[in-house]
Length: 579
Image (cartoon, rainbow, N blue to C red; front, side):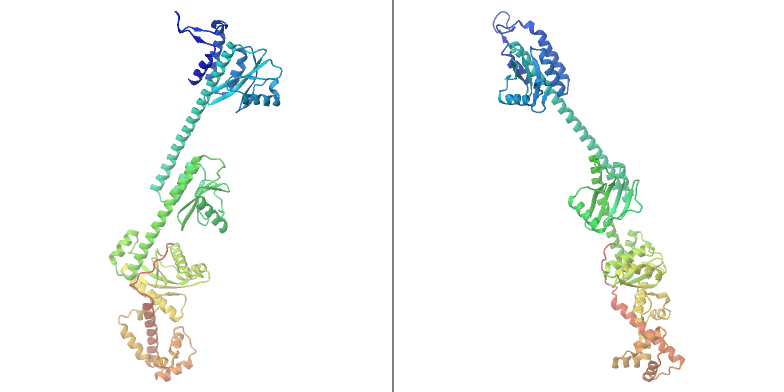
């Protein structure tokens, strides 16, 4: 409407309207102009050109059509078209010179907004007809002729350029609308695909606990192979073709730099043909989710899928860690209660929660030792991992400075210890195995037997593995209900020797007892001293038997006292970190 109004305003210089007379409203041309009927062919041409231009959406085509049609509307020739956006087009030979073009540009910049008279070499007349729109002048038609155009021709050319401006603006509007619609369609498509990504991964998160299902869903959504690595670069899941074998692993320094970069940027990054994202719901839980063989140019939905997959992976990792920590606490509490034998109802409820079979036989096994670093958690993790690997037991906890395992299987304990030793990095390990607990109510007794076995092992400097059932006479002595009677028997037979050691601060009895317990035979001096102090006839078999039994009783009582001192059954175990 604005362009048409502008055309009518320009046309008012040439057309007037009789408001008075018998034929009011009839258009009359100014005095001296030919009758309007003579202009009908040209006006018809302007109308046809306007229709053709408005049917086109190509701005270059519209401008070219209007410019090349101008000479047919007036006695003139086209020298070229100029716009500040696209420069010169459709130039004649005269305007092919850059110097001539610059000269005309200077004239165009210095004149007004209407038809501009120009100086152009030997042309008798030259002018610039502006192609205007609401936003300003879009282009100029540079025309020349043997004389100045008539008022009639100016009117026709002005109307023509205005129709060209309208067509150009309509083409721009159509292009803008098409671009907007295309962008809207892309946005809708992206939104729909994002919803598919969200729904797919949300369904996986709600229905599955397996990391493999997350990787499989991401592979289906993106079309790229997917891998999940742990903090150290170890492969945990691979989904899709092309899995390397063996799987490459970065040096620790490079891996840490990569993790720091991922954490710092907070978005996916590229690394050697992969698109990586960090899943770390907490500092001690870290995984890297990667798309493999990803080209440089990919659709935005790939990033959306990877970021959403990373969120689901982080959520699953957090859930797994939380469940593991809760299960570990429940297992530790269950182990404490079974060893102490103080809360049968609590033990049963926790066993039911863990789906743990309490009715099978158990053996309490104590592992005592440390790694090279002497960190107790390291020793605990190694024992837990190995007993789980050998399917020995799943209830593992720390008790009194040792690691207690409620074993439901009986492997070769020497072999298991030999497998554990290399992981200790120069540390040491001793093992004590309690007797069989046929029911879970017998587990406290098996625990006491394991404590006695490990105490005897320390006091007698025995081998690294002690099994209570193999203790023989010690096993019999430890089962005596009245330890007072056992101690009185021991004191009756060994009082003089013990009193002598106490008064002289000597170790006659200790050394002799240890020597006897491991079968030493060269003890003549000490035996003679024992004969002199005690007054016993050591050649008498019954005397030797009584002294041997008293010595074993003394070792057993000392081991029991040591176990009771080092182990307080009423005190819960120290919490250990999840492994």
